[in-house]
Length: 107
Image 1 (spheres, rainbow, N blue to C red):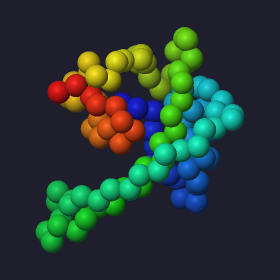
Image 2 (cartoon, one colour):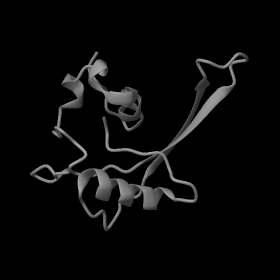
Image 3 (cartoon, helix red, strand yellow):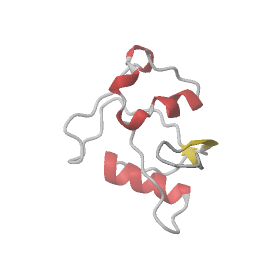
Image 4 (cartoon, one colour):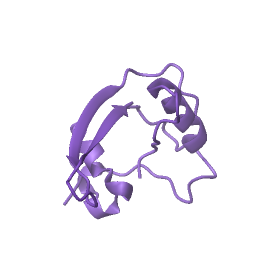
């Protein structure tokens, strides 16, 4: 699973990125790179009239440090080559997020 989060009420994308960096990775994201912004819609699985679900993605791409950050939130945290990682290994189907930024997970 990618370090990620939904926005908290009244929280902006930059604030959320800094919160995720701090809470999930134990790192300070200053300065913060500009995000790539994507929107997508798809039918909700449990909707009787197929109301679309709309996602807005604010993706902040970072170069990882030579050593992994440590956090008590993760039992195991590691860098993995996306192209060699099967889609089934991604939590919450985050393979689609990687595709938005041009990375293709393995089959």
